[in-house]
Image (cartoon, rainbow, N blue to C red; front, side, top):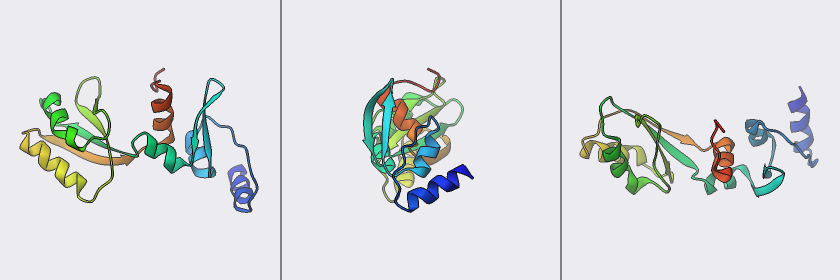
Length: 142
């Protein structure tokens, strides 16, 4: 109910200052976003601009059991626009990428050529949480 009122006011051209730690709400309800860290504005722009600045899309890759994460990371490097991030156990990799037609096909072929078997490859768009963590250097656990 409250968010419907906020959406209606914004649609009518009313400027609204919304402060929230729920970044999904900010993503849905705002045209311009200022990211604050410890009381200081560290970035601002539209949701798309902020997400693009930290790697707008990521490939998330689940390696099959027993696969070599280093070989996978080497095969993925040509597609990455930033560091390839393995999870703690090296079973999943996250790769910031620029969206392109046929990207997933080329990635799977490169992994196959490197003899790295995978269980899953998905593309996900960066979230405002990703933006905040990238800008502040903090992780979700921090």
